[in-house]
Amino acid sequence: MNGSNDVAQRKALLAGAVGNFVEWYDASLYGLFATTIAAVFFPQSDGTAALLSTFAIFGLSFVARPLGAIVFGHLGDRVGRRFTLLVSVMLMSVSTVSLGLLPGYAQIGIVAPVLLLLCRLLQGFSAGGEATGSAIFVLENAPYGRRGRYASIMSTAAWLPGVFSILVAVTITSLTTPEQLISWGWRVPFLAAAPLALVGLYLRLRVDESPEFTALRAADRIESAPVAQALKHAKKSMLICFGWTMTYAVGAYLLTAFLVAHMNATLKFSKTESLFVQLAWTLIVVVACLLTGYAIDRLGRKRTAVSSALGLGICIIPTFAFLPHTSLPGALLVVGVCGLFFGGVCSTTVLAFVELFPARLRSSASAMAYNTCIAAFGGTAPFVATWLVGQGYSLGPGCYLAGVCAVSAVVAALGIGNRNNAINPQDRLPAHRESSPEAV
Image (cartoon, rainbow, N blue to C red; front, side, top):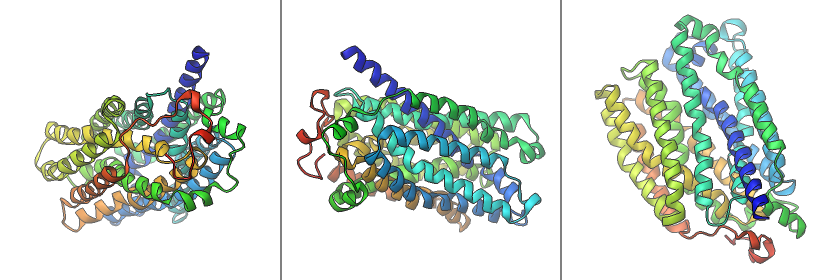
């Protein structure tokens, strides 16, 4: 029996992680090719205005994430975790491939950025179900006492696509001339999403439903209106999740989509150097995520969360102060230190999706809290940071993230538990675990 459970847990982890990889590879490409996309889809009379327009579409697409959260959250709590993961990976891949096929402004004028926005809206809608849905599915299958490590693997699966997509971007920019990159080179990574999607879909078709949702169904504990019940009974936990996710939201998009464009367009770094810094930062985040998983299981959730947020907040302002005055090695050093702390933020964020909410409301409550925060703070972060720098506040992006880190540290200190409350496999029935809707 234990052997079959181990196999099921590993299959669930693989399906969740690989599917997550596919989703976030698709999502990360837009930021990496932001300056090229600006040149293709917007008139070039003002380069800064074109870049701002590109990031505006980046931010507007996040409006669809709360809608995706409601739809996928409802499906996850009503139909099942596995079904939502199949739908989300298909939608994300279709939208990404479609984006790679779009004609530019020179061919169809203003229709080009409109179609670009539609593709990004579909990506945002899909992402509204993937981030929390895959984490919930995997962690509900996690072995007792090892949720932190499983959460860290899911965080790694969300950031490894960044490494892969950066390598693809570096390869494409190195092998093409600037004219070729604008003409066709940028499209290749988006079209490569198609075969990757087939792999993710295949793996997700081969796994069973999560044990906790299966137990809910067997005990006739499926909520008929999980979204409404979450808003009624899980408000406090949703606010905690929102407050903690703020640091992840701003940090993730400010230190990826914005940083590459900022170093290339505003500072003295070349496109390749900017991507190399991004690659190194992402690799450090991946390592930090894995280390944090062990820290969570051994030291506790609260300590890991608070120390990670405070560490990132302390480091980020000196990083932005130092970047304009350093070369590539110095940039690698200061950005890498931020990555060490950010890895801790990532793993504890994934864990919060599951441990803050009861199983019967988990998909809806976590998806709404997380994606509303991502839409409000993550999707707008590159635009806000670009505007601050454009107004002459070179330290503005760092100050913004530092302030958010301070808020999240307080929320974590007050609202995140410090115990291992993973459900014992022998006590899966919700009736034994959830005496009230706010039970953790």
